[in-house]
Length: 342
Image 1 (tube, rainbow, N blue to C red):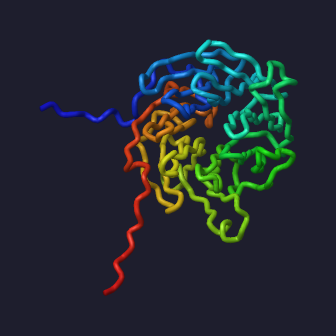
Image 2 (cartoon, one colour):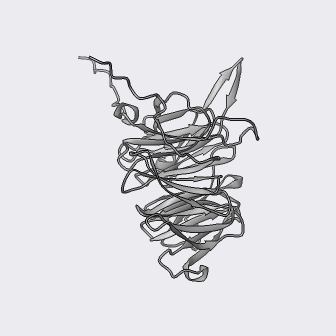
Image 3 (spheres, rainbow, N blue to C red):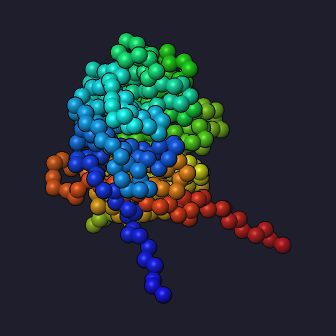
């Protein structure tokens, strides 16, 4: 009988990866298609299960974010200040509109039927992709932010905007005239990533200083008492703590547990409700720049890509790994209560 060898630890490496830093990757809500944006000025569409490159779109500058619209089209945010719609099935693209500075983040709201972009020009813009082409006809509104936008996340009609200066604005997409809540990050250092809980009750926020904060929208005392922060992506060397930025957070769509990725090259999986780490995957060749679970939670895409946290230096090539997720890595463990005395 031949021994069955498990696949290599990091997962299957996708062929034809981007040629420069990977800014984001996202699975489709409808299939195992994976959309990837990169500093090499491209957006690439992969079939992650088949390990094939399905399409590639060149932009006028580095692409800082991307998201799906449906399985055959998506949107991108570029450092050339443009917001683009890309249609994979026809291989065509058009410009939805522009910001006055690089566009850092992009999200598509299924609830509102709108594209939401955040830029270093300190604004948020909402676009209606169904409008005829031309910025005036597609732009729904422009909303000033306290600082440059670093990260966005959506759940239902809620939008969380994290900016420079540790500001966090929470909006209701049905009334964008002003934020529902204006907050400050509970972490002392710059925000890297914000992601809403799938159940819509709050958000996780990570910083450059190896920490994640778990926050709740409900402002009642009971809800706010549940918030906490924890240290992660650190190591002790010769008696001193080495601390890494936490670049990525991704929630598991079935169990509500979440993965974090840091500049230490590690991906950790956490059970936020029980405040426990469930799993740590073996180290990747480079910093973890982005993470995404597939729609059913059976696959995890990992961008192992240098994020220039130590400036320009020789580094391992940028790579995308797609790993099969084992239930034991992501399913919360039941609490064990001691038997009551007889």
